[in-house]
Image (cartoon, rainbow, N blue to C red; front, side, top):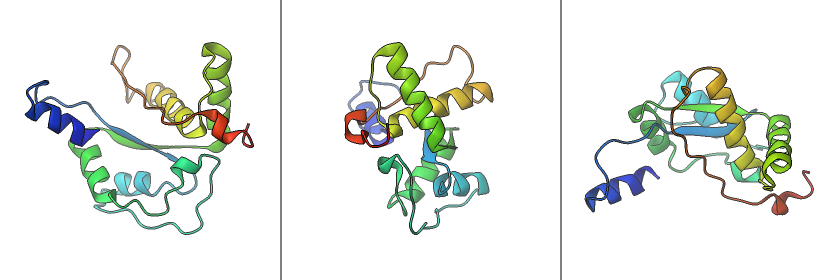
Length: 142
């Protein structure tokens, strides 16, 4: 998305101002989160990573240095979410909105709730959450 913002700015469709970006990872092997919090330029590899959100199971992010740079440049952050919270939030979204989110999409909503509670995202801030999959692909998890 960061690259997309640069491209549409080049086209003259938006101004230079960018949103804050947050990375969300599964708790237990959140290497980007740890590297960001430690101020590191790269994230260590994590062998045998496991999570119910297979889309978040990335033992070594190829663009980790890019992600960490963007998080810092955008004044954003990185946060980890546990599997139980992902499932709980997915069920809540399904019950309230009728949407069947995948665990990784639900992780983003769970992270949003944590960031709001911790006041990292202020009331009234505009937020976009990307959900890139359907819960139908994760029936065994639900």
